[in-house]
Length: 259
Image 1 (cartoon, rainbow, N blue to C red):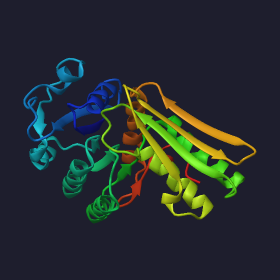
Image 2 (spheres, helix red, strand yellow):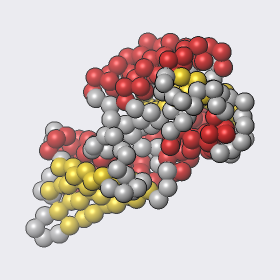
Image 3 (cartoon, rainbow, N blue to C red):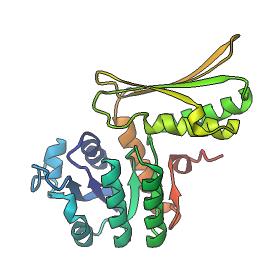
Image 4 (cartoon, helix red, strand yellow):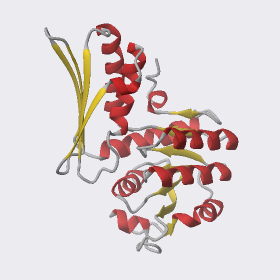
């Protein structure tokens, strides 16, 4: 049985992760945290997620080290904010707990800080801007298309998300830009990204390659956030069974798509 701790358990994605965990025969929720000032502290994580009482109380993230020591999880799952994720990863690393991180919006410095902590703690880690299986196939399609079309094509990425999303451009759009830039030998900022925040759009990404003569579009639309939570379950299993200690991997590794 894989023992799982969830950070940001009171959030939209945190609740989905808890619900998905309850559907797995080989996983068990053993700890749940949220922001230090959360009004939900002391409430049952299962009740908040709508799956009934689980006997796991919400605890403030400032007590994460204590929670990990007491609950002894195999994996910590984090879908919070960039600054909070960095601290949570550092705490997990010090406790020897593997991590699965779906948070986006990290700066290069924050990413380096997490990678350093993971290496020092020699823990297994999956950090991915998007846990969706479809999006990771989308990444591969973008890579192959860029490789075949070449630098004669102008490239634009358009991403649409709900009005509550904190970071812009999205982590998925930035990842697509990195892939294209690598194939073209460009700097990442040469790939134009347009970010749209409106309504309750779950997530839509379009990569456009065009010349005056033709236009190629690659599109991924997320219909439900459940796709991200389902992908996280795959990441949890992978990090426990096949993760590399001290090395940051992502969903390309989880899904066997690494080229």
